[in-house]
Length: 371
Ligand code: UD1
Ligand code: UDP
Image (cartoon, rainbow, N blue to C red; front, side, top):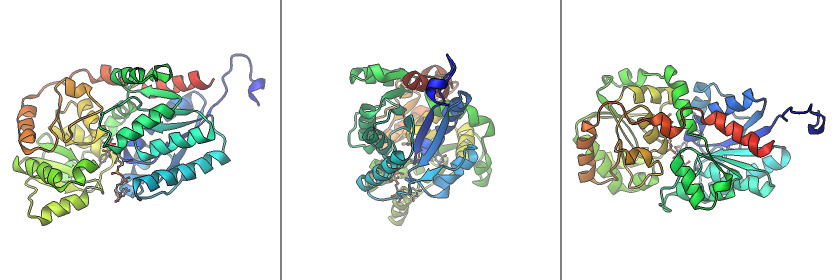
């Protein structure tokens, strides 16, 4: 049946293409996908291949009950310009050979930018989920990806009021809509299935350990920063569970080869999302430079130290619940003292991050754009 033959008032079924590729994008897929399906639309999942280890990719599709992606562009790990270029070339070819009503991209990785560029070259609308975030640090590859993607995309889905206001300040307000954070939707939706097994496996007690992740190039590619972070955490003597991103492993090895100590820090392989939720539920504090994990700490009502000087997720820092401690030993030590004093329920995360309805609101906004 063509669009012209639809009964009056009936909505056309949309064919969307969701481009993902890096770990933090996979857990953002389920709620929007479910909302689109409920509305009678279909979503084809394309994976760029930016992340490819089982523990960085396949595991998430299994745990989240998602089908494996329909297509994998298999770009792999190469320098970021080449990686983005390969994605653009392969995704443009895919879009050229298939018909979609729109491309949906998430976040701020090279996969995000390549998806927005390819959609614009082919001339189909692009939806940016997690739009309007700014750290104002152009040395971060993600900041450039965010700004460029926002200026290319046709529908800008802002997760927070701060992000929405920022888009307005950049002259993009007419394309922007406040939807909430799909990561918050997933956190709420999957917490009931959290897997706490890594805690016992590592021999630590629930409620008595901190959860740590580090993977920003600013930290991993600078031995001084990485050394300061590891030495500061080790010096506390705390039990810390640290699932290690593959980018970070060589930096830790170099620190240990140079005589550095890990104290009570237990290194783990990268874990699945459900294991991560289990550790978030049971830890005391979170120590991280991850965009996703700093938000999840807030959702789980755990005070956090953030090993960065800036963040695009400003709300919880402004509320004093997360502390930007960079990679300075003195500041990190003070941060540990401060988070000890933060106890009890965190400020209202549901109000800030959209109450778990972001997927539904994005589906509604996509219909508003296309139907
Ligand atoms: C990317 C994103 C970053 C995001 C992070 C999430 C960009 C510019 N960066 O950073 O925004 O926070 O993903 O985790 O898009 N590697 C493996 N196996 C894998 C994937 C990567 O061993 O499955 C190793 C490779 O040595 C690779 C390195 O990790 O060179 C970095 O991977 P890459 O995708 O380039 O960037 P990330 O640091 O993962
Ligand atoms: N995460 C995970 N396993 C890990 C580390 C992180 O499942 O070993 C999850 C984490 O809970 C969050 C997402 O990955 O949902 C964040 O991804 P990452 O830290 O790689 O990227 P960022 O959010 O910084 O872009």
